[in-house]
Length: 251
Image (cartoon, rainbow, N blue to C red; front, side, top):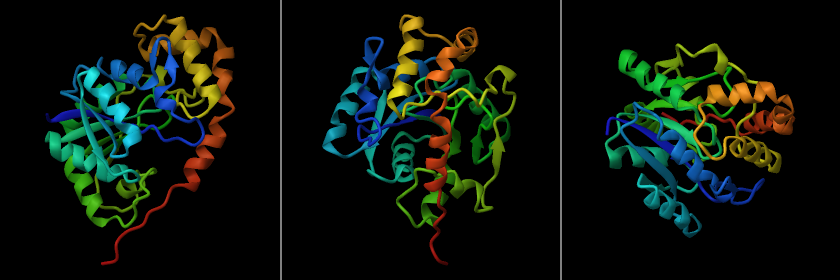
């Protein structure tokens, strides 16, 4: 497959234990995400990228049941995990969907695939969007280069290896409709109130598919739902900042 969606997930979590398996409207959170990204019309495949730890066997079983690909790799280094998945499935370009981002938007994923077809950048990011609606698009050959030059297994905040080294062509996601430019809305699963936020939305739509446009319209009509977890965003961003490091091998 040339174009794929990589879902990055593991069961280990300190702030909200086993959050990927939390029940939301009749299905585990990770299943809700898998079923959502299936609505991409450009992706040629979906690969669940998890670890080799026995505790993540259940995620592999979910991938099998949902009839998507899976790859098991490094526990800590998700760049190496992605690299292994891209090699195994012969992927040229992939869009990442964090297991936390249950409302990752297929429309934005497809924008990234189309942009790659037009311009072939090494790295695409979306900024100023709803938190959790889109993360990154990555060219597999650029990822391979990053894996050669980095000197750390802690790659949770991996974007610095693409953006801050001056070695890669990085681009902003283009043609994004204004309705998605709502950074004050938090849609990522990290804390108990995030779970309450997602359950409120999924229950409102009765477990059926709702595009992000519909979700935002619902939230604008119910601003109290936005406030359920909005206060967590500053803490979330501060934690990300603390974990962002760039460590390269010496020449």
